[in-house]
Structure formats: C-alpha cells, structure tokens
Length: 444
Image (cartoon, rainbow, N blue to C red; front, side, top):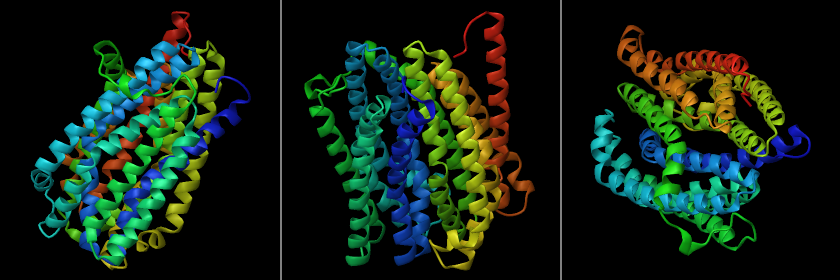
C-alpha cells in the first residue's frame, strides 16, 4: 500500500475485500432466498426481522476490530512489530469475551427484544428459534471478524476472501440440504449459518497460527493486557458506539415497518438483503481508505495518503451512480426473486425507489469517514454519523412517520439521514482543512 501505483494498490486491496464482504453477506441472503421461496413469506419476514438484533449485539466486536485494524495498519506500515504482536493478541482476547457475552445476552433475551420491536405474533416462534441458534454460535462470528481485520489491515485480504468463499459454499449447500431436503425451515438456515461461520474462523486461525510473518498468531499469547486492550478499545470505541447506535436506529425503523404486517416486513427484508450487497463496495472502499491512509501516514507519505483518499472518493461516486440506475431499472425483478406474493413485491419496490436514488450520498459519507479514520481521527466521523444516521433518524421516526401516509414515511428515514450526513461530513472536512492551514499543520 505504500509503494507502486496508487490505483493499482487500492484495487488489488479492495477487490478481495469486496468479494469477501460479498461472501459474508451471502450468508443471510441465501437464508432469506431459500426460506422465502421454499418455506414462505412469514419465514422470510422472521429471518429479516432478526437481522438488526444480531448486528446490534456484535456492534462492539466490529468496533474493536476496526480500532485494532487501524493500529495494525499503522504499526505494520512503521515496521513496529512488537507493538503489532500485542495489538493482535489482545484483539483476539476481546473477541472471545464479546462472543461469549453476546451469546448469553442473545439467547436469554431474544423473545423480549423481538416483542419490544413490535414483531407480529405469527412471526415470533420462527424468529426466536432462528435467533437462539444464531446467537449460540456467536463466538465464531466475533473471532472471525477479528482474524479478518488482522489480515485486511496488513494488506492480505486475499486470504480472508478464500476462507469466506469456502464457508459461503458450505452455507449454501447446508441451506438447501437442511431446508429443502430435511424440511427444517428457519432452524436449518440458522444451523447452516453457524456451521459455515465456524469453518471460516477455523481456517483463518489456522493460517495465522502458521504464517511466517510479523502478524503470526501464537495461541498462548492471546490475552487481555490492560494497556493494549484499552488502546484497541479506545480507538475502536467510536466505531463500536457508532455501529451500536446506528443499529439501534435501524431497530426503530424495523419496529415501524413491523406495524404494517408480515408481508410488508417480508418486502422490506428482501430489499435490505439486496441493499446489503449494493453498499458492500462503498464500505469496502471506505475500509481501503482507512488502511491506505493509515499505512502511508505511518510510513511518512502524507501526499500519497491524500491522493489515495481522493481516488477512492471518485471510485465510490461512479459505482453508486451505476447501482442506482440498475436498481431503478429492475426493481420488480429484484424483489420477486425472494417472493411472488404481490404485497411483498409492492413493499420491496417502494423501498427501492425511496433509497436507491441516494446511494451516491451514502458514498460521500463513507469515503470521507474512512479517510479520516486512517489519519487517526475517529471521533469526528463518529459524531457526524451518530447525529445523522441515529439521532436524526430517531427524531424522524417519532415526529414525521405519523404525518406521511403508509410505510413510505418509515422508508424515507434512510435517504433524509443520508443527505444530512453527507452535508455535515463535507463541512467537517473543509473545517479541518482550513484549520490545518491556519496552524501550518498537515491534515494528511
């Protein structure tokens, strides 16, 4: 990342990352596709409504992996290998603790959480069953996220991709076997997901335990040293809080959608699965910006860091405009792949037209936020995202949805928050730039 052509370095790093995230998203999407087509709309809605709860409980793991990834990219770029070793092994210690806590909380309280979201009663038995099995294997998800963060931060995203390809194929095969072959419904979908996540975490750990590199993992060194664990948490806490709070706002949105019944929930869930794929390149290039900027700043190459961040901004803009055109042009076909029921399709298509035109705005937010995190500034992007993608959404849900007829009032929560976030992020970057010029400091 610190040598050679910038665009080549970014693409070589980002493509495996995009494909890896694609494979990870494939877990839940295949679950939804199979249960939607072979079980029914209620099962599709149950799996979809469970998604925000699972993301909420792993938010702190994702934040810690982001914080650890920033430290790893900087220490690896600066060739500070002792510090690198400490960060890696404390990240894995954190993963174990968070995985166990998430399992206990998720298994014990998922019925209460689902009811608090206003989940329709006809969905409850399947949603509770799916979540309890899913949370039972949470340790695999938290551990793999940390292992993947290590590989990605040192620029070895190809390996994490390989493991995700294998586990995704396992997941797809088990979905069809357990759901279509054995008729296990949402139970089969959850079991398939847990087993496939276990496969990816075992493969990644095996590689890192054997690799002849400064980032090698030594099992007996996995620990929770107060100093190093707190460094990871301190840098990752903004991202963790951001993930948790955004997830909370999404739970409120899901609660609003739940009020319109099972078929509307199913349509919303179908769109969100497709949307998850659409935003993967945006998020992946944002992660690439963080790693690229972090490594080049660590190596003292600030101009190269700025050039890479600018290039990623343009790439995200071009991609999002293309995806908007595709989504609007094939709206009905996309949703009907998950369900043939008219009300489900109508709900999903309505969601497409509310959100897809604003993908480029979301690209602005994440491109700038990723670059800023690479400089070590995690608080600024966190504050902006909390204001726009959480606080504003909560206010909108409580004040505006009752004034707009139908579920469209709930759907519009997303694009309005995107626009606010992009405006605030641009203002913040310009503010930092002018302040750095006045103080004769370098932003990058």
